[in-house]
Image (cartoon, rainbow, N blue to C red; front, side, top):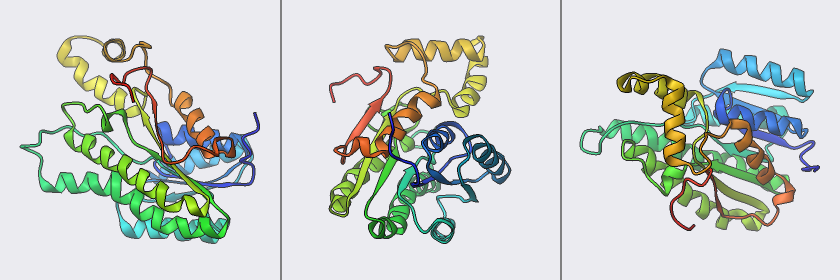
Length: 264
């Protein structure tokens, strides 16, 4: 299927590894030019060069911490200067947490709020004017199944991802008149470096290998019985970015192998 993305310009945050990198690769395969950002400048530069070489598309890497207002302004300015604007924004940057509500400091709450929510708010204010000039656009937010079905050990992550889902819905209603479609994806278990890092730590306490730990997590939670690969999830992101999903507006889509335990 031709997803009609050739010539589009896509900005992906948290794009040097995991889901963000897989989304960037998927968009590049469809002919989109890329503006990729991440905090790890060396890894970002390496992946940008590889994608450009393998896919024959233009890729700009910009080191940016999306929780910082100045970094976001610089990122948007580079995209405008180098490409003349943005057609697609994938807000992917984020990370997990581990705390209790009673013990977590205000500073931790604020840092996750800035990363998961305010980054999306600020980027919307920065790129929507450009999308309007270009006749429309697409914004996709990567939230989490935890926005609807919280995990006990990460209340800050759960709360900020739930807020991101609500922001996405409000933004969708506001900008659809400008032919800008906004949607959210709530992934379940996806095999990212964060999961592998956690498995290496937590499996030691249980006397099992990291792979055994991950297999147990998958079988206990997802009816499909396994983790998704980032590439499996990325295919859905790329579809939602395309005109083929033209009637998808203001929705939240679960890609979770059946993990969500309620009818949504």
